[in-house]
Length: 131
Ligand code: C2G
Image 1 (spheres, rainbow, N blue to C red):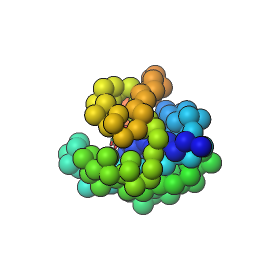
Image 2: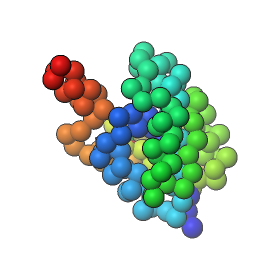
Image 3: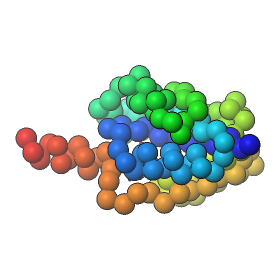
């Protein structure tokens, strides 16, 4: 009866995103997803996502493997979100390997391998090159 939590921007939703969500969901019985807000993205990457936060929330909440979604307003609030949603496991892709180990006093922290050869940044570059 474990609750799993994960975080991400999930901009220009692709198969790498769906695969990590499916694998995260398989670790428990309930998957909660924190979707990074537009403002959080701007502060991290100095650009806004292609899809706005309401559309990204809508896409993630429509997935069968996802039980609950919320907007992640700050990277520093992860501990609070873990407690609020009573998460037993925090899942992130291994591009974040080691970065969230300090939450291991609150829940188990698991890094899953990223799906190779696909990323939002590469998709944006391919689309740009075609124009
Ligand atoms: N991912 C993956 N395989 C890919 C691309 C992404 O498994 N080919 C995973 C990432 O490792 C991450 C999740 O999909 O766990 C979401 O990826 P991003 O949208 O790029 O998330 P990011 O901007 O890194 O935001 O609080 C942390 C941030 O919100 C994470």
